[in-house]
Image 1 (tube, each protein chain N blue to C red):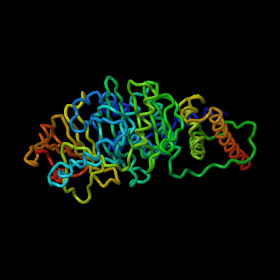
Image 2 (cartoon, rainbow over the protein chains, first blue to last red):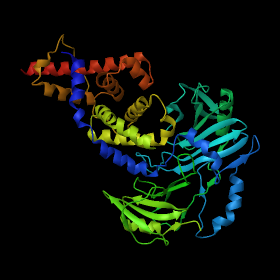
Image 3 (cartoon, rainbow over the protein chains, first blue to last red):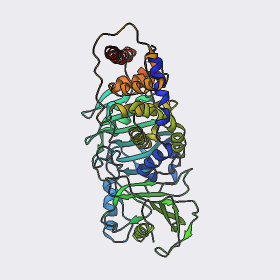
Image 4 (cartoon, rainbow over the protein chains, first blue to last red):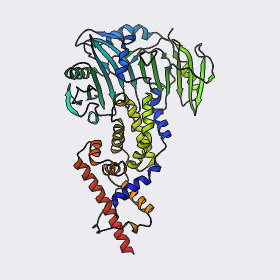
Length: 337
Length: 166
């Protein structure tokens, strides 16, 4: 008998047992989709850095700490005041950046629970920024990947090679001169990897130097904070901020985006609260903080729109929870005066 | 991230079929692919412009399966000599033969089963399988050889038992 033919036929005969794609996609969405940002590829987003006001910073030294300490001190009085938009603490800080003008295009923290142990988040903090010096631009991305050890690294630029940076094992791209630049996966002090990506119109050796040095100087937990466009206060006992993101305007994003993910942080069912630009449909709801609202419900997924909440931009509060819970969250919004 | 959605929707049917072949179970396949989609979202910024992103995601599913924590089914232990030839028409029907083979495939070690799925379902050649698994072609051939030997031996043992009973 032809056993290889039988194996092939056996596989084909069971194709129909594949699960329903819509159901799988919907389940995955519950875990990640509602924390989506309207973002483009990082290298393009970085081009809009000039318009940043929240996170732009000028770095004048070649080896110095970055903004966190100053920012924290400057905002200390704000943090103490109630009903004021609170800064958000990032899971780690960038302790060094190359000389030049640094503009952040994305700062976020996402605690997606791991399937095997929901108490262990899969991701963590992430920064995307551009450092400009004269005609040179360096595009930098730094991200915690708690689910991926360095050994599991896959590079855009081809095979990786083992490296030790600051006494920690890692894997870096062996071909930093390619279009994808330099990548480094360094063992995270907690678990998984710290991923550093540097590209730009500089010599490959410079990319490597910058990437390694950024990785060396990342501080856990650090003191970096970001400033959202709106906040939340006095959340219910069963809700806390599991993730957040701040994104400035760009060619693809007309106004700043702020997003929160609220939940227990140990399961995937959460509520997303985010600035949205589209005009909502739905039915009119009750006033929230003096703003008109719209209610939309699709297959048990409810969205409450608070219109013109932040600089003529709406805030959408959504989740697989009753509309009353969304109103409860809406009443806890802290909007800029 | 609209391109993420588009990409996922385009790839999902294939990924789910592939995961079903690997795990042998609908629910496990769904869980496996769901996990991959979550991870893919976190990495999308870095892989969205890759030329080989389809292969990248296939590798994610493969690695997810190989590192799956759930216990595997009891493995088939093959013993006895291999007859010169075992005729397929000795089975009651082709359907029964395929179901029997499906159960035997479920008993293979994961890496061996993965190689068979890639070779006989995805129609990859050994070089492609080696690249996907991150191993040498010789290793792929070794896995395939062991898997086929186990399956042949198992069929042979059963065939001999049937002959004795008759």
